[in-house]
Length: 615
Ligand code: AGP
Image (cartoon, rainbow, N blue to C red):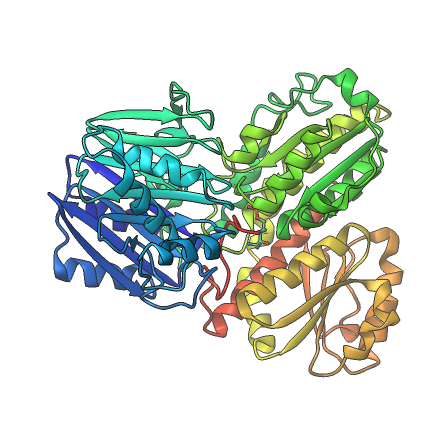
């Protein structure tokens, strides 16, 4: 998904636009561009590659002006080329636009515009956007003070698809226009300046005062004023919100990569997840923003957990936790599947979506589909003011701080911890005893310290990683609540090291995947549950018998016989309610070190982006 920034104010725009892009680069990084307007002269620089390359190029050419837009791309339509990089300028040179999203009817619009004599320089759908605005602009009354804004409004009525846009016009050097539908867009309100951005990380260094646009809204920033129009074209008084973290949290510090920083940030993230969220008697959890009463929750007879990617793995862990500790049936669905499945759910179903970014379009669509059918919807997410946060009936903020690395780590374990707290809360509304609640809370509170202990395995895991960095295939095996952790371990490895990796229920291996087992296909086995330790021992022997290396994750008090494994990582003993969090740490460190040893871009892996805001 792309990152966009717009600026209008009393300072030179280009350094602000480029700095903002750098902080959005985790959203997409195959090409970048910036356009700045001074008087009526538009200067544009585009570059295939990273924002830093663009910045060198741009600074060498001096971009002057106090109004501008910029963009970092994750290609949807059109190859990764300089011509396809944004900003896109209309054929008459008057309209420059940056776009995050997908226009589904761009071909028919392009055909119409070509019939009107428009010419195109790229293969993108976004260039159609700028030309359609130019088309309407040419037809608006020349002396109308809202000529530019009206031409954007008319254009949006013809667009099918999703967009977050920032637009400027060479004949309106005093106006910056933004609009959103399906892709996030915020307004930053600074001192004598306004910014538009895809998310807060691009503007946090300049202001913590933001306005979140809703779908269908359009904003004009002109003459020091912010004018916000709703989808019904009514003026809306902007609700100014404060960003709940500061720029320091998004700095890399002494770490080589954001992913490693965020792995080591996990104790703090877990503390943040628990802050102010236990009852006075210490026997249960409490949440301020659920907007669902205890009585309503006692009526719930099924919970549907919906998400994508790593957040979907968190849902799978949530299923084990809630069914084990609250005895409520749970169903887990990929958001992208649920939204089209038309699943028969009864009215006492509670839908809970999980999303770090709060902007993943499939998860947002599943949320909207659930609301359309009248279900109570909750969200666990890490982005205050995000679309999912604003559109769910209630929810739980993770407060894990910004997660910049594309591969999710602290957001994942924060989600697991919150799901565990939710299982406790629901359990104590039903059958869980006071004493069990007390013990559970004690276990949750101990988790940050246990994670601090576990990340100390970093050097040991680096040494193990050196042995396996050249493997081309790998199986991750686990049972019960460790099966989702096996899936997550496989996803971490494949998305940053590009090694083919698969996660399976350990018992399932003999029903097919065991054919993959060989000296070239190691197995990483999670053997951390005392109650099924013997079963996992059998699975390990099945792997060893076929000559495959075994890396085991086990408990300090219950290690595996050394002769049975090639390498073993021992995590601290802990309550079952926090075991998934601890078992995730070795997975994260193993994938991080293997990817780094392979020379991969750990924070910005190929083809990926941090927040998937297109279908
Ligand atoms: C995880 O490492 C990936 N970056 C990806 O699977 C991610 O979890 C998924 O896109 C969901 O993102 P969200 O939590 O922001 O909705």
